[in-house]
Image (tube, rainbow, N blue to C red; front, top):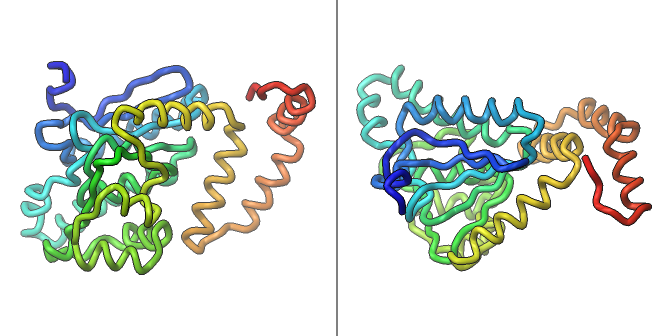
Length: 261
């Protein structure tokens, strides 16, 4: 790791063509998130979503772990006041929910272990590609913490009630193979193949129709939450049938070439 990479800082944004990468950057503390990091992440999400040239987002960590979660010392300091505690919890929850709703498809590049609240941060991404030595655990029950409801809902929607109960109620650590089996990981690869697999998926997503993907992602998320806006989903479908993307997609298909969206 270079000196620049090892220096602790808020999350950093790297742009490469149609791909934006956000890298958590506190490797000495396993990329543990600080209160200031939350504001930075929200601003980066807004910047990415406002740039039409960005077609896919990757979230990853610096060093040997993805993230150790939210700083427990910050949580403890705020526990003296129920108002402050609620504010601290809602701030992290807002970041995770914002990530889940970001319009561009998102990939979590799990370069190592993922712990605590960062398990939900990764789960809010559309895809999670992890190395075969990854591990995770959710220590809420061990800490005496009732997790925020949207995080529990995400676990249940993505992994099912039984797996959510196992992870939350036992607070036991599981390895990459089990993470893959329960659906937490989209794919599991050796460390040396991580970048290749992330690049492959990012290229596919960056090449597909952005408006169609944005709309379908929203509809899928609404279905998962049991809160589908049927009228809006129908409207997005109808608009896509007469939009520029479908014209180019059909033209490219007939001409046997990749579409240019």
